[in-house]
Length: 154
Image (cartoon, rainbow, N blue to C red; front, side, top):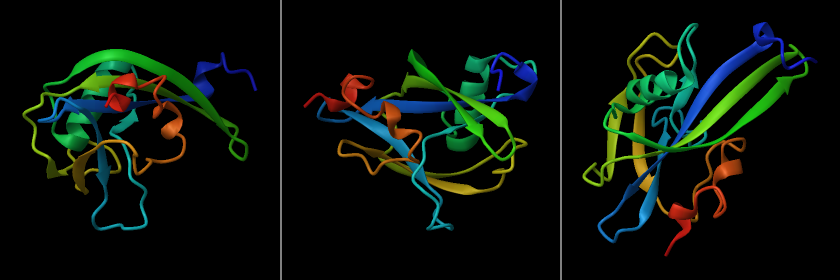
């Protein structure tokens, strides 16, 4: 498959969000679906709308899913392409590291707003230090000391 054909690529964004706790250690923001126990632990993210920049989609998706708006991009972590062999559709995921204020609560619930399929779902957010209850397998590629050194400092 030719990955340069943008018509066959679905663009997505994912946010690894860190904050410093009271001990000045970084923690990673994760969330669960409290009403769907079989759903894996996840990080915020979603689709890029037509005409929307990757960074604009990142901020929008994080706000819709978590309610967080006061975040700063620290760096781009990478991009991963996955091809569904059955549909022959490529999903391109753009991963970013963001920093949140240390004053955020340790946990909270948020009802998703926006126009996506997750609208109206309630997610439970929490912060975690390593070892991480790994998010979906394809997200955990960046949960390591090389890509997120801040998270692994003791």
